[in-house]
Length: 207
Length: 158
Image (cartoon, rainbow over all chains, first blue to last red; front, side, top):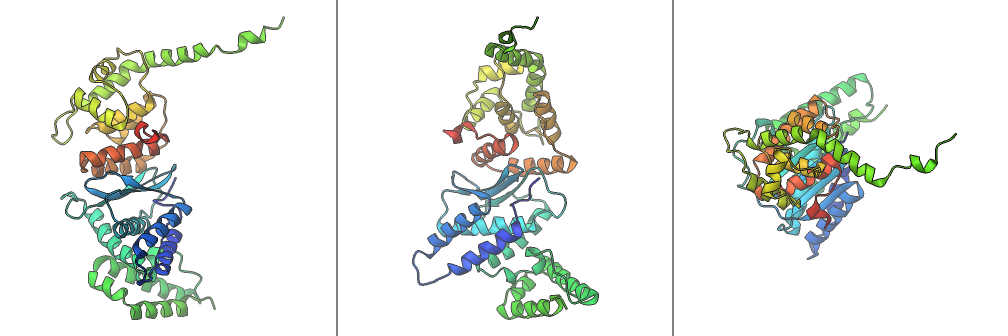
């Protein structure tokens, strides 16, 4: 059985890292280079990418099965839009089902204004969350999202108590992040990110 | 006395004969299942005409004429309907459900190792997929063929 993409956490972390490294504003080829680098990285990590599909209402989609994962992107998108689709679908992979992995799973990325009207509530909730996580990936700062989204294992901790506190804090942060756009914005501020990293280092480092 | 070893080597023609015999045994049931899928209304939408189905299979890269659709449905065609055409046909039908799909493929001798969770997920996927425009459905169908059967659709492999 397969997840939405193999090693979603590693893939998202590496994608954010590559985008951070390519974020040189002075370079006119920036968007193209970032898109090429992102695609190359995804393919190296086992995600097949096709940027030649003739899609109408979709910007792209992700399909995965035991035969592999593939990202299909519309040929009409420019480099920036392609990058957004990659980041968004990888964000979906991070947010994918926690339960047993499925034989066949898909996520669709719609052109704005062309998404179907009647989408299930859980799909809409995941969409809002994926927006925020995709922004963090595109900014090259995955740490701007709650840690439990991109790293389920919180590490050993200093002791039983500090581990419980750490887990409680991360779960609280994740719950707020799921519900509140204001918290999503707050959580992405560099000062807040730095603060949460310090708290995590303090409580999470083994004694 | 030992038997002449050459007599144990299967004649290549006999492999075709096995396939033909196998198809003869299942063609009526496969045909009626596919006909039922095509004709059953799903959520009040109209059933697919044979011509439209033939056109959609053509878009997937499979040459199946309207007359072939009709004869397959009646179990009259002796040429076996390939697994990929069968899956393509099923994916074109609004009434397709995960269970019907699994049963159809089992009839054709292809076992889908899907549990209840997988069946539910596939039904959800079908719901999302049917909300797409026809152009997008055609692209997704081609990819689904690969993920279900492990084969490229004819259009892609060219």
